[in-house]
Image (cartoon, rainbow, N blue to C red; front, top):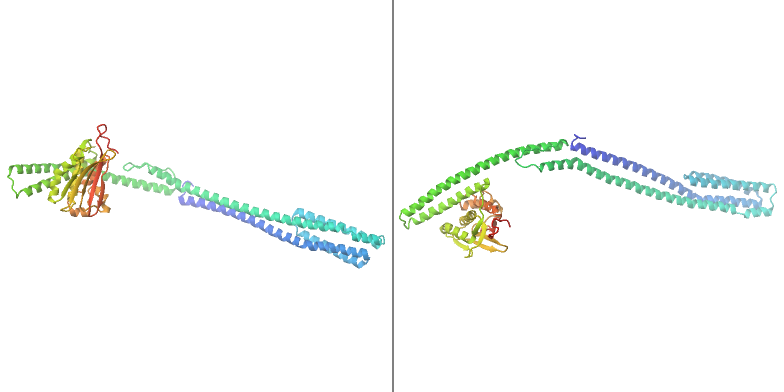
Length: 496
């Protein structure tokens, strides 16, 4: 059975269990049927005996009455009729005896018959004496009046009937108990068979699957499949082979993805670095142009446009560069004291020109006093810049953008950026935090790479916090995160 299939094993278990159950049920049925047949036959015979006993007792009384008539009248006709009644009583006694199957009852009944024969013999000797004239009339009358022997026979037959009925009732109860025991045996075997089938199924199917699951749970993506089962059902071994093949395919695909990701990170980092260098040259050239060329009212808007686009492109390039570093594991934080209020005001002063172009109202909600928190100032500045830039990009002209910071109970500081822009659809709430993802409405509203929010979340996760979003489509969004308040004794502990 070692190399049998699961179907063959399960079929064998079920067939064996059902065969044994059928055999036990058949034996129980036949035993019970025979017991019922014996009870039915015994009941019928006993009922026949009980039914004929009264008539049989009457026959005995008739024999005695005919004998009394002869003794008192000396008429031989009565004697002939008495002999005929005695023979009829003996025949009936034998016939009733043939209906009795219990040995004790049969012995009792035969003993009653022998007593009758003895009584009949004594009566016949008395009759012979009377015929010879050796019996006076007074003695004959006295013998006729003496019914003690007959009454004793009748009482004994009545007692036999009561005992027969008691034995019949005992037999009925015994048969009923046997039927209950048979039912209990069949039921018990049925339960045992069910447990045996369950145990067999668990051993045949569940156990190999658990072994396979226990082995598969130790495998990790990217590692070779070294798991094996030396023996087992063919279906489980086939499944193991399929899992091994799937693992090889996954490892191959994982290796391709890892190489592609490494190449993408290198490419993004390289392009972003060169892009930043080119933007630095453009920014320097623009600054020199503004210093050396006399400014005019007509040229001012163009200078502002150049400065705003240079800042936007610089932010995009920085985001791409830092995202590549994060994905490559080369982005590190330097935790120190950061004034959240000053951080927000600095970001607004640098980027407010972007909001001015769209005629957006910018509001800063932060205390005048310092609001120290623990974090990497450059990384947090990049997060605030991304959130503010996104708020400006996705808010229509005439809207409002609010940046703020506040102290929270428990020694934490909340920083938030809210707007009255397009908001985020429910289906995009999580997707917008994925790298290079942009919603359809966002694509129509502004240009970009879709890396700002992904980078911001990664930076905040490195700080031990998360970027939270409250939004309503068409009415605006509020992005916020929380940092621990700065503590000189443990500024680097960002978890909490």
